[in-house]
Length: 489
Image (tube, rainbow, N blue to C red; front, side, top):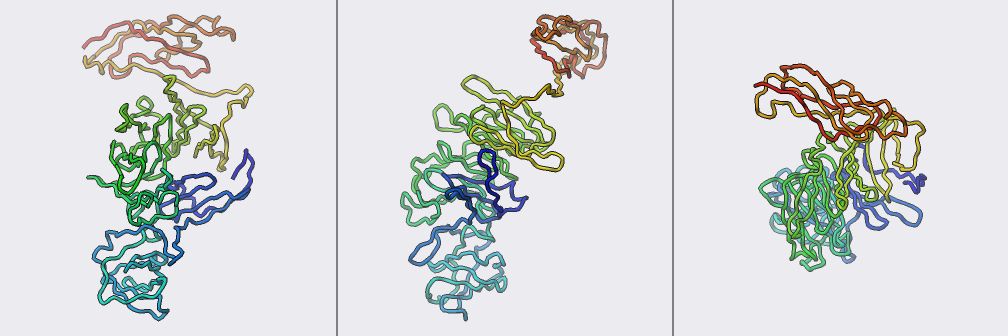
């Protein structure tokens, strides 16, 4: 943990390195709750000048010490009946015997809701037998029990995949065993997920249903509660959100990445996310009537930069969206709707970008250099004495065959380029002649027409008829290209 660039504390994380790709979190004041499908939720809390990590616990009822945890009937528990018998451990213990193989070692510690009681599985005996404990004496039923439920989250069933806060409710969404479920806590009681009797401030549970299997990737608290799944984008628009007024709808069918967590970013009132195919960056925003969402593609002209995104972060101060790619480079979107600006660029470094985050207008990156990892940040004031950066650019025309005229032979007499403040230019790999005076430091460069003549005849009409390029560290601005010649079909 850093404070103004100074390391103030190291904490041992409960997750292993390979779990980081799916780790999600939500922050409220000085508390951050982390969720992962294979780990119990954890809380990072700041107390005074100290920090600590503790497990997330569901609120308990003082009267009987039961937990306010959601319960489910999972598909593989259908048709499983439990016969209850006494246990030598005491009056509060029982032996659960099922009519077919069901129990596993991972059931130990989980909670079962049976006969209006919560039972904690204390010991695994066999696939059909476990021991359980309940708080208080009980009566043994005369027949096997079929009406029973498991806690929604456990070592066997997995844990929440995504999290956010919305309308003073803690939202858990998706789990390995119930990927389309959304669990919402009681209002103001973020550890209480008991559905109770359906009062307005009590917890809510819903399942996304459609013709396609919905796997929730993440949830976003915006003007509405947005739910991004592997095949579409949903929204709950209820205000206020109560058990009796849940208005949920699927708006678009783009889908998000499910294999890892790519945090959606809020940009100028819209939610920006990576598409399921990892080739688009979509902007989820309401239409002019404020009723339906659209998912516009922000990188239509920059598909070549989308090469396996692994992380992203938005700096609202500089209006820049940073997207880290698996190859170690970074694509940057400069977005400012008020000025009509939407432009892409690419950053490379001596090493590989691995992760990015933005805090208080500062953009931080994790960079791998020579088998080591470094935490670095971008600076507008850092100076580099006589620094250089090698680069090149190329622009080319469409081939003549693209016109549909089936060209077979091409003769080009001249290619002319109209330039502005230019000091370097290659046309079809031939250097264009520019006045010597423009190379003075005080000169802005040449503005006007430059050309290359006598380019000959060619029968290859599949390649581009002209190409503009340069690899020199000098300015070059092309306003237009004119080609003189003819072709035959």
